[in-house]
Length: 291
Image (tube, rainbow, N blue to C red; front, side, top):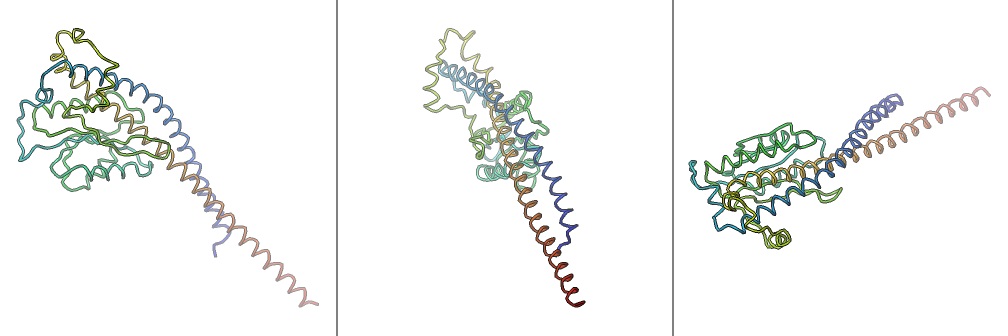
């Protein structure tokens, strides 16, 4: 049976941990709210870039994929796929990185190459056999900057210019609601748009004469901008999911601490009551002996 002092010490330690988890919960909630507000602007920027890009494609007969991948110099036994994967730098965010790793294992083969964003995910991928990371970006912070998107997009464009790639895909975590975030894969090369996206562009139609000097020339110089917007949106969406899962994890940790403290207090009171009862019994027994 644990002593009363040991139980009091455990309650104090768990109480201190609870203060930390509660503070981290509040910090994550504040960061989540800020990122969510910014995400609306990032989404608008991405949608506008995408709409202009679709208009450029509609007004040109050029093979857009050939423009990007027309002079391959790296030759593999078979063409590879490039994946950009987004994880976290810090821990304490529940199953965020584990879910990403599971999705990566489902999608990526031993032949594929990766660009990894997030040091925690990179450490997990380092233990994965036959994982080819060509670029790793760490310390992205709690507020993703456009510079990170530019860095990744520049690497994508560089690889496309010198290698033979089958496709380029982004694997990121999409925020759905406060208790659910889901890893998603989005293809950004070959550049295709579904029927729904093409229908939406009808409300954003741009006259071909508006493009100077021509849609083909603008399109050729717009790939990096499209890649940057796609990466920036995925990066922000992933960061929002990370903060949501971190807030949930810290909220659950605080609740668990409360449960532990309550259970320890019950045990403390039970032991204390048992000792008081034992002392009373001994006093009464001693009194009866004296009589």
